[in-house]
Amino acid sequence: MKASAPDRQRPARMLARLAVLFAVAAVVITLVAGEGRGLVILVVGLVGLVVTVVGVWWALAHRGAMRWAGVVLGVGVPVAVIVFYSRRGLWSAAVGALLLCAATLWCAHAALRRVDRPHIMQEAADLPPPQHPVLIMNPKSGGGKVDRFRLVDKAKRLGARVILLDTSVHTDVAALARQAVADGADLLGVAGGDGTQALVAEVAADHDMPFLVVSAGTRNHFAMDLGLDRADPSRCLDALTDGEEVRVDLGMVAGRPFVNTVSFGAYAQIVQDPAYRDAKTDTALDALPDLLVGTRDRLDARADNTRLRDQQAVLVSNNPYTAPGLRGAGRRPRLDAGRLGVLGLRVENAAGAVDVALRGPQAPGMSMLTARRVVVHGGADNIPVAVDGEALLLPTPVVCDVRPGALRVRVPKNRPGAPSPRTSLDWRQVVALAFGRPRQQTEAEPPTANADYGRLEERTDA
Image (cartoon, rainbow, N blue to C red):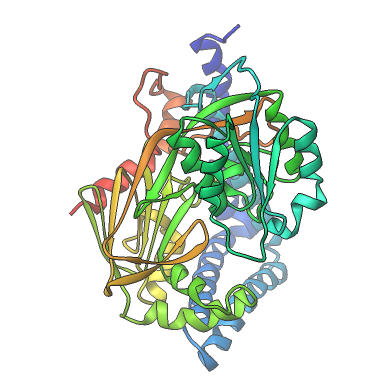
């Protein structure tokens, strides 16, 4: 039986009051610790953070002596702050303040989760299992997960036909999927990276056919946001016999599908380098100074009616990721909003890097918004683009859009990695919940991607 609104609000109100209490306690402990020297904790910590960020910027944006100076600052300053706290007898107060801040954030998030009703992708229950499933597997993906987890054997035992890719030659994976449909397949699945997932997902979407994701790639971001088990990809195959469906969106870039992200600018240019695959760190460090402080290869993007000018990097995602700094950052709370997430970055110097590090999306150097259509212009006829991590060269302008609800994804009913719904941290709502009448969010309220995105869209709209 569902709890009534008053029943939900009583523990939520208590958690909100605890969050406020812990926040006040953190301020008090900082100001009065060490016979009035507690303010030193805040000042030294803030200065240390700023200098550390400057050091990281120097290490990334410069070469030679400046890079080594940045490394010294980035590593040495945090150590120096810890030593300073210890020798001045402020260490216990600093740790106490940090613990209280952590407790504040936990209670605030827990309070909001109890009263908010965020959108959850709806599952279709009691679906019969597929009769002719076909799974395409890449034996080299994820360092050989197909063999390590015996995915071929398990899939065959569950009644699936397996197509094992020959990685020694180029294979048109989409053509294999289309042929499987022509041969009578009623489900398509992929055990491989996100790039391969996207190509087969488009074929499944075009035929309104269930699609099965097996987390056998390296990072498996799509599988993560679907709640699938990334540690044991064989558990994804349980969906063949005990599964349910979710409807999710499919991103498109220049007519090509993507399930996670499309990157323009710095990262896209780095992955174009043939040396990147074998020496990622060295290649990135060698390229970043020209990409960060140079004026060439800047990007202009238009997200619906919002224009982002002179960007060093633009990231377009199939549904928006959680804003940096919030719980759940790096994940998409939902995959069926029918919107693209857009992140633009323009950092010219160390001061800009500090501003972005401290204020995140509120800084002028970072823009976050959502859109249904994104058009990216570069300074050349063809620009480097990374589509789900794959390096491509695409003619400009490059158009990104989304196919809402185009993909039927079959997932196991038991998904140990299914993310719990999270809310953005709105301190005004926390205070209102603690001491006044909270804003009610109902299931009938039109879904939004993230509260922070709406505010940023207004700020960046030209």
